[in-house]
Figure 1 (cartoon, protein in one colour):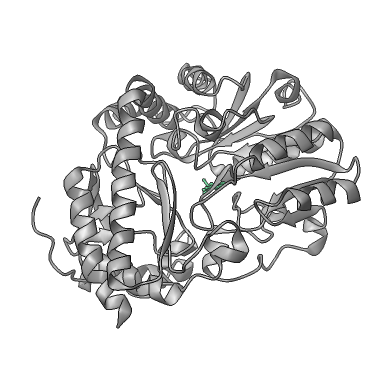
Figure 2 (cartoon, protein in one colour):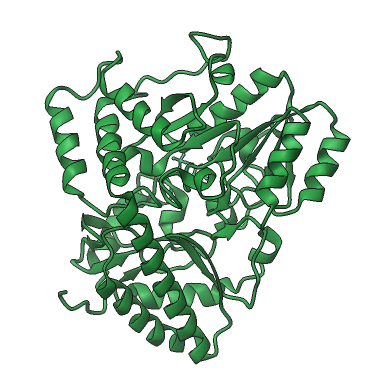
Length: 437
Ligand SMILES: *Cc1c(COP(=O)(O)O)cnc(C)c1O
C-alpha cells in the first residue's frame, strides 16, 4: 500500500468555497459539510475498492462506502460493466425495460416474505410510499416511529429523526406544519411498553409501526432481544402494519437483511442503498394483498419519471447477483474483519484511558464516546461529541475516512483487507492520544 501522509487540503478547500457560493452549505446532503466535526471536507475524485482519493491526492481507507451502498467497494468491475453496457443502449425511456423484473426477481429471492416489489429512486421515496400504503390498507391515520430512527426526509417522518437531524442537534425541521406530523407518534426505541401504551391510547387508529430493525442513524444501535418479536406480536394483534425499514440493513447485515438475520416477517419492507449498486434506487414490497393496492391495480397512487431506470436496475442486478453468488464467503468475512476492527479500536481506546463503548451488527458499527451501554436515543445522545470530533479529524489526517458524525454508522465492505484493518487500528492508537489532550 502506498504510504499515507498527513493530508493536504488546499484543493478541497478551494472546491468547497466554490460550491458554497452556489449550493447551500456547498453540499447536496447536510452531513457532508462536516459541521459537527469541523475541518475541511475532502472533495473525492476517485475510488477503487476500499480506498478513495481526494482533489489534493490524499488517499483514504473509506469506512463510509457512500453511506452503505458500496458493500463491494468502489468501482466494482462487474457493476461498472453493467452500467456501461446499459448506458450504451440509452439511459432512460420512461417505459418498461426487461431489467426491472430481473432486479425484482433478485430482491424477491433474497426476501422470501415479499411477494411483490415496487422500485423508486431513493430510500426517502420508499419509506414515504410504504407509509401511504399502510394507511391505504388499514384506513387508519396514526403512525408510530422511534426516536433516533431516520426514514428519509418526508414531512411526517421528520420527527425526532436520527442521521443529519441528530448530527445538527435539531428536533425536526422548519417548514413542516404541525398538522403534518400530528399523526406521527415518536416513541423511545427498545421500549415495548411505550408501544403497548400508544396502541392502548389510540385504539384501532394506528396504521403502522416503522422501525430500523438495526438502527444505523443514531449510530449503530441493535434491537434488544425480543424487541422485534414484541413489535411483531403487538402489530399482529392490533391489525397494524409492521414496516421494517431495511434501506440500510437490507443486503448488509445478511443477504436477506435483518428479517433473515432475526427470522421475523414484517408486513412491508423498504430498501435502498445497496439495492442500487451505487446508483439511485429504492424499493418497497410486501404481500400481494397489500401491494395490489398500489396504482394502477389499486387506489394508492405512487409514480416516478426515472423509477426503474435501466442504468440503476443494471447496477442493482450486478450488485445483488454477486452478493447472492458469494454470500457464503462475503458475509462471514465481513463479520470477521469488522469484529477485528471494532475490537482493535476499542482496545486502543482502553489502553489510552478514553471512555468508549461500541455497538456492531455484522459490518455496521459505531464507537460511542461514553461508557455505555447505548440502547436508544437518550443513551446515544450522552456521547462526548467533542471527543468524537477530535478522533475523527485526527484519523482523517492520517488517511482514515470515518463518518463525520458520532450519530452515523460506519461500514466495512468486501473490498477491505486485513492490511486496511491493521492500519486503521494503528492510526487509532495514535489518534486516541490526541483525544486525551
Ligand atoms: C438512508 C436511509 C433512508 C433514506 O434513504 P435516501 O436514499 O437517503 O433517501 C431511509 N431509511 C434508512 C434506514 C436509511 O438508512
